[in-house]
Length: 291
Image 1: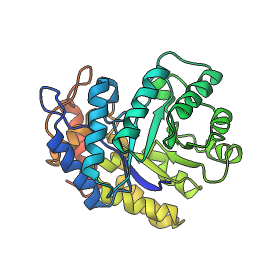
Image 2: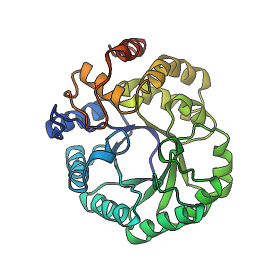
Image 3: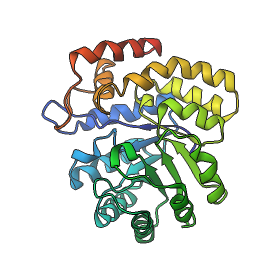
């Protein structure tokens, strides 16, 4: 359904932590102009963990409205309570999102059977296309390829964002899932290689800062043009590293402010990027040609 460079978009906030909807409108326009293939709203990078349910739904609704069907919007609707995930997913469907991205339940560490039943329940409750999201470094919960394979048999579970950085998982998921089930990298540093090996795209933090270059790299990788893709990815490699010098989305929000695209604002317990970390992010932006 979706291929290429999909930005895990920040949620812009004022100094008091309130969502800045005018800045959000500007970010949507920026990504449309830069050629981004899809927007993921209110994922990890969008600070889903600190938005309440009303705010979460409103950011999705506003993003869909600003996009006005010019770019697909995938709504982050995962939660560690199945009932909350169903509620958020239903809200995204009503707002007009094209699909939802559901992170594995975090903190409570379900079994593989629990993961299967959780995602099955959401898929059966809301008939919007759903993309699984496996990021054990954040959630302390790893969805194994065998569980992905079971879930891929459910009609409206259409893909997975695999953020382990383990490229050896791709062939296993492909073998266990039906034709058309999409696999996206959730790890910018290995995204280029995953696409060259047959992945369908990247749900990217780096694409916030260098969307046009990220789109060009994805196009080359998806077309199998290895040397071109790797050369473009080399220019992005500094961002792939520096945007995680402190916990995401701390560095990327600072970078977007430096570009004049977002105000100074992040919610506790996250804090603004520390002074010692800023030169590395700035140098990476310069390497990518965006600063």
